Amino acid sequence: MDPSHSLGERFTNCILVPQRYLLGIMTSLATFTSYTLRVTISLAITEMVQKKNESLVQHEDSCPVIDNATYVTVKNRDILYDWDEVQQGLILSSFYWGYIVTHIPCALLAEKYGGKHVLGSGMLLNTVLTIFLPLVITSTGGDWVVLVVLRVIMGLGQGMVYPVITTLLSQWVPPKDKGFMSSLSFAGAIMGTVVTNSVGGFLISWSKHWDIVFYFFGLLGLVWNIAWQLLCYSYPRTHPCIKPKEKEYLYHELAEHVSEDSLKTPWKEMLTSFPVWTYIIVQFGHDWGWYTMVTDLPKYMNGVLRFNVKQNGVLSAAPYFMMYLAAVGSGYLADWIIHKKYLSVRLTRQIFGGSLGPAVFIVLASYVGCQRYIAVTFFTLCMLSMGFYFPGVKVNALDLSPNFSGTVMALANGIGVFAGMAAPAIVGILAPNQTLSEWRYVFWVSFAMLSGTFLIYLFFFSAEVQSWNSKKDNQE
Image 1 (tube, rainbow, N blue to C red):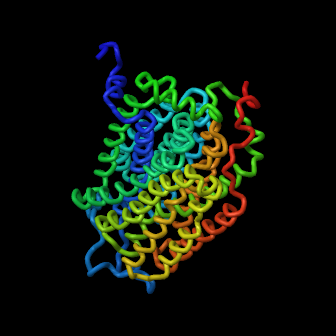
Image 2: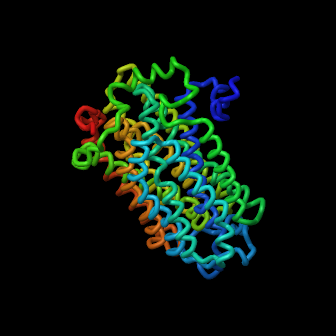
Image 3: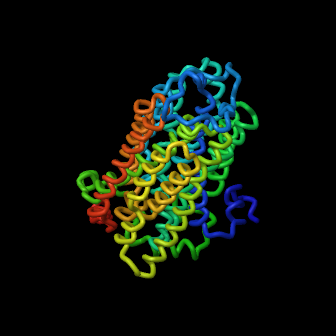
């Protein structure tokens, strides 16, 4: 092997899979890693807060502790903090205050200069902050305001993840693979939630300390960052190790709608595009249900259903594992249906992307009372049906504008962030006592968001490449 080759080139020369699939695997691991870093606090906070005396807070519609056993794992009062429900809601939602800021700037950077280093730098920032988070919390005596500030900075570091990955996919993925590759990439976030809840719950139960999960997932983040820098590149044309046959294939497949030239972003056309706003509204409704589940399901399992952290981790993970299987499987199925021309792209997206199933199941879960495992079953069905969203809706930015898919995703995901900011705060306001009746209001709000946007999606959704994507109209 030529000794002048870089370490990254030597690695990629030894990899037999096509480079576009390697990129798909690494972007999937990127969303996986980003979510482990993002939601670790959602699990850990159930063991970071001092529990109220059960005899003083027992409500008529609250569930008893299972078998009269404690559902508290961390008992060292020196590492427990007196954060009320509103403060906890602010801690969980503050991530999204920073997250929304970097969406569009990073999408524009990725579209102009490539996404490799934009994504890598943000992920590295998150990794470092996650590792140092326990030290900061303990050294400040659990100052929740400091924790909010750190979470805002972490949000700034993760704001580029979805827009930049979308930009990378637009440069690497041929149309016939869009559903599967985008589902694989974005569904990594689901597995991140699965692993965080299951492995994180086990680690806390084993160590009797909440800080271990931040160190564990922070180290995983470092491993991903090293691999990303060694293996991945922004464009097929700049990849030093891509085989000529694959490079020629990608050029042929992508040439019609993806330009290699520097293009001016068509802001006016994009912001007045009805299909773009339909996509934004639909994603907002989905994100409301998603963020309610991903941020607050561990709290519901612990504070209402009274599972301990180990049970909580495993049972909170189950719905997301089923969602992951649905997302990746339906992504492959959607591509197959479109490739075989059994259905149009638009009709296939509509069939897969509905939100009515999740809306119904999330409400049903709140009406089974303390029948814990029935509730978990409904949560699982909710997330299973939500998995079809990935090849149905999430891929739509690539449908509408391959050249500006990162910016379209930034708009949709950025506005969807308001759901991530509001949903945890709504839980803190509507469910201060963590009772069944209070949480029922929370789930009805999610029902309204999911079902309302589903109707818009049903009638107005588009999967056509928009005219303003054309390079001859937008070239500088």
